[in-house]
Image (cartoon, rainbow, N blue to C red; front, side):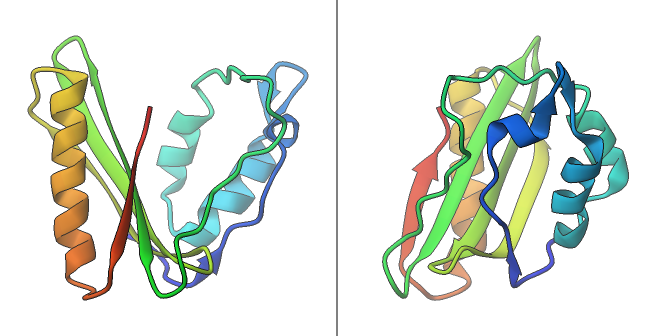
Length: 134
């Protein structure tokens, strides 16, 4: 699913969203090296962006020698999903996952994302820094 060793550049939110629409070429240029199917990218650009006022997307790396697992879960009208990414201290993507899950709430879906992600990450045998979405 993932292409290991891909370094993602920092981007300003306004680069992704211009004149009220997604910047499709930029989204593709970020997602293609990660091995994300273009059908998924097409779904992403259907979602409207709401800017929080911050002008950069920022990922904070873990301590040297650690891995960082970012996970989140979603739940709406009885349907749920879980996803996450695993990166090294240099910001290189090691692997990621997305899954439909059976959940009774967003918290349930998020906890399932934590479980799936930790199982994936612990196979690497390194210390793990866990970050859970809002």
